[in-house]
Length: 174
Image (cartoon, rainbow, N blue to C red; front, side, top):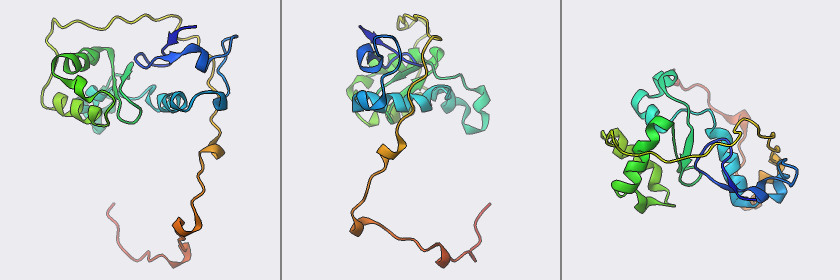
């Protein structure tokens, strides 16, 4: 088995870590932690607005944003872009020294700053060649065990909040 992208292009997974021999997703407890983290993050990114489009249109005009098609970087500091803006990311990464942020939390912020300051790829800058093989024929991923995500804090680190003793007389901005 080889490497595959799931849901979005960019992040590549070892097929045998994610899928069984008959093509179904493995149970989550059989998938390595880093792969679980990326798969979990993909659920939030698929269908989300492109970072570059969002920087152009903002929260007030999300319908003007293209949908994310490609993801680069590490979970929670990733760059997610549409095909139109992938070239801008690649140009920044390879030609504007963005590669120095590879694997770093600052990757997303640095690209966002460069793009927001007017950084764009030249019109004749090339694109990344991607191969799509039956992208719509994926099995449903397994549901993560939410109980497994709960963490027990030592008693001395737990904070108790008495909801009966809350001052609600304050005015809050609307």
